[in-house]
Length: 153
Length: 104
Image (cartoon, rainbow over the protein chains, first blue to last red):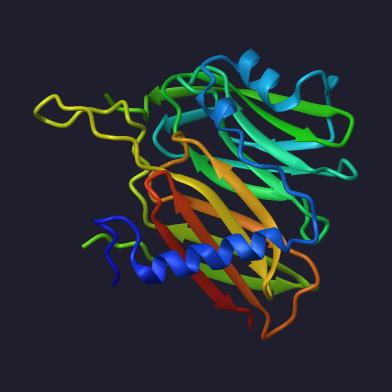
């Protein structure tokens, strides 16, 4: 087992460089991480950072699977899938979390538009799943009641 | 010693592989305090890259609200036995880990 207590090991560095090289040779355009969007403290600011002026519309072509009641806010399972053609990215946004943007997934045509992840919720909140295409953002959402918050502190 | 293992499972059904991934990571938010009241620094996976036979098929950016020891699942088109699916992550402290699975 490798340890990385004093920064990157040589092996870790080489592996990291390899992944950077592989990234630069990718056949599909993938979006760079938006650090500002992850630091944003309101959903409105997340939208602004991620989508700018792109129009946003509600959609029934996104399936968001998430429990209505989460007994443990530290581990809330989320599955998002969509039949919207040319979906470029899927976003999970938890309105009431300190930083609402939880995760973004940059898709390629090589995979079905379906992902699952587990997220932390500090308290009950609207959870939104968004799908971005080149010219529009599609949204759906579900209210999730949290019995025990999962952000500690 | 910190365990950074990535555990993966894969199952092909009609050419589409479902990949389930379990990563060991604290996913610290940077807002929690230890018993002495000192803030525990943020430590979380920022980026995940998924490859099918060395072609990137999915990348993900995560924030601090992804659960500790993240579980993550995705699907890959046009897969067959012997194909390799790799998942790697980098975190906000510059650490890196990688796992792979040979599909059956």
